[in-house]
Length: 260
Ligand code: 13P
Image 1 (cartoon, protein in one colour):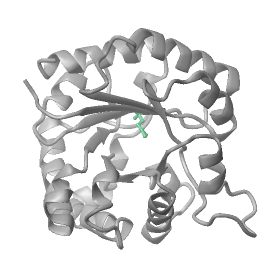
Image 2: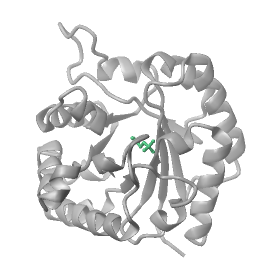
Image 3: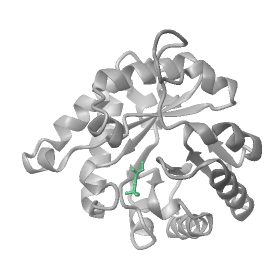
């Protein structure tokens, strides 16, 4: 049996509107209500416009809600941004920083992600920092260096006391989305172990309490093998989680693979 808390989350990206998000969350809570939350945590990151309704229909002791992005100031002349204070007002306590689509489509930098992580921690939120190498990085053999840089800059200034509130998702860029290929389990394990080593180097024992989730084309065919890997603490799922019944089955299969 695999020890420790296991994490299952989904990033809903820019797909579901208000009604679809509410229906999805209602169904997911109903289907997973019997799972013991001492051993697992479920979290869902809807679109901004769906967050108020999501917060209304969700018991966050069953399914934690998070935002997909955040501006790093409390307020100000930042047209189009949503602040940490606005998210807190809705009862949202988790926020993602550094998803590969933010980094590559919207050209965000490691410094941008660091500011969001800092702002989240300052406002009592849980930051979920995503890291991952591109196909080119992998070809040049610099995956570890890239991950180390993303972690060291993204988590710069985080104290040892704050570290256990942070979560990390390893999402290799080449594995994400419709054109992605899932990472081979052996490769995922190597990269997760490397990430954990960097986190221990940065935060000592507190670093080993940071959960590291795998994301990128997780599906019903590979979830069991990926979650059973020693250095994988959870699965961060896109497409395969967007129907509540399918996500419920994937979670239960993954738990069974861990002897739960
Ligand atoms: P897919 O599972 O659809 O590849 O998406 C993963 C992801 O981007 C989660 O943030």
